[in-house]
Each structure stands twice: as structure tokens, then as C-alpha cells.
Length: 270
Image (cartoon, rainbow, N blue to C red):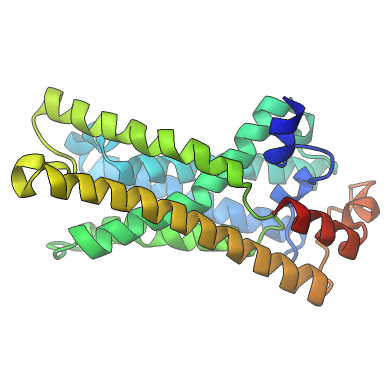
């Protein structure tokens, strides 16, 4: 099991503080930034369900909304950890057991990768036109601003490149959604996405869409991993921004560490 955690970046060689600190924003501003994103994400869900309550239940059949709920819940959890670090100098995440720490690291990977899949499929395949201002705002929030949140979470925190082993967990996540989509068809009589209907364009075309989305997601995973590495290389190794730590953190000097040594360790695990 120790090897699994090592491959998953859940060991002492990989600082958990990277998930609740920023190379750019001091701890209180980083907390405010995440709280603002979290508030907006929550409001999108509340307003959407309030204005179209008849669609509230069926939204859980759509990968778009499942992903958006995932982003929102991640932001809530990350705000809690960022707050606890700013307030007490130690995040609650650091006191969790390794299984929960692993799930948080994996959760981050899904939040910075899957929104790009949603955005790419919607604008390339599904988008037609907006009929109302509400429809425009709602769709832009969940199909464009979701990617903005993913991008900000790639750039602003001090996170390390995504572990390759996480790809193995993306496969059942995407496969599980296919199950939800076809259960929805069987129980509610409609396909959540038209390209999942084998009677519309043929089973071969449907299979091609499914495989294409899977391959595209793996490619996006690799791109995001590379972007995080570039950010780490540019901000820490070249510019010397080792992180903005809480004034209440008695280990802030240790957390900064030896940038060169830590970067070399990260290169090995990449």
C-alpha cells in the first residue's frame, strides 16, 4: 500500500500544503479567492434549481452538472482547508488519514481535468444557440466558467503535477457515467446527449464518440499535468516564489524548503 501512496503523491516527499497555499496570493487573499469562486458556484446551482425547479432532479443525469457539482463541492472542501490553515497554521487535511488525503489529491485531479472535457464536447458538438438570457448565463457558467475555474486551480495554487496513476481512476469515472446515461434512457425515456443514441447515427458512430471522449480526456490529463509542471518550474525554480504561508504556521520556513532539491524530487516522480 505504501507504494500506491507513493505513486499517488501521498507521502512526506509531497507536501500537502501545496493544496491550500499559493505561490502568488498570501493566505488570507488565497482564502478570499477560493471563497469567491465557491460562492459563485453555489449560487449557480441555487439559481438554476430555483428558476427551473422541474429540471432540478434530471440535472443529475448530465455529466455537465455532475462535474459542476463536483467542482462546487471541491471548492467548499478546499475553502475549509484553506481557512483552517490561515486560521490555525495547520490545515485539517494534514490531520486526515492517508485514504482521505489520497481522495483529496485525486479530487483535485478531476477538478482540473474533467471541466475541459465538458467544455470541449459542449462547444464542439452540442452547442446550437441560446434562446433566453437565463439560458445563456446558465450554459456559460457550467460550460465555460467551469474551465476558467479549472484553469485558475492549475495556475494559482502550489500543487504538483498530477500523478499518472490517477488516469486509472478516470476510466471508471467516465465509464460509470455511461451507465448513468443509459439508466436514464431506460427509466426516463431520453438520452442525455444525442451522440449516445445508437439509433440516431449508428452504433459505430456512438462508439467512436465514446472512445474519442475517453482518449481526449487522457490527452487533456497529460496537457494539464504539463501545465502544472511548467507553472511549478517557472514560479519556484526560475522566479523563486516558494509560497505564501500563514503567519500562524510555525513550520513556514520548513514548508518553503530547498527549492532546487524539491524540484528535482518532483521531476523524478513526474
